[in-house]
Length: 63
Image (tube, rainbow, N blue to C red; front, side, top):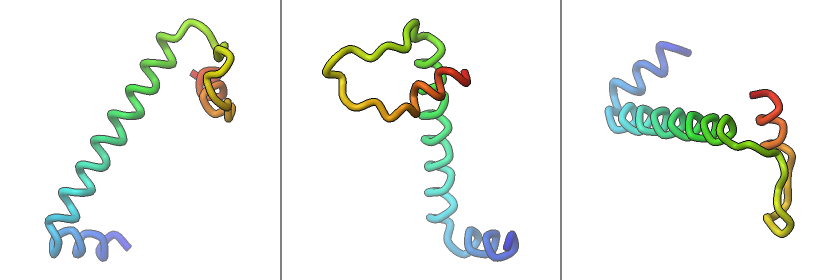
């Protein structure tokens, strides 16, 4: 599996660049979400703010 992935990335440098970009953007998004959860003082969602799936509340509780 690792050999196939390494061969693919060597044969297609565009795929390696795209993978790196996706990893950087994903990590940046995760850090931004964690910072916003850490700095938010309240768990309450104002009325009319949209449906609450509970994922943000769960992440806030875990963080």
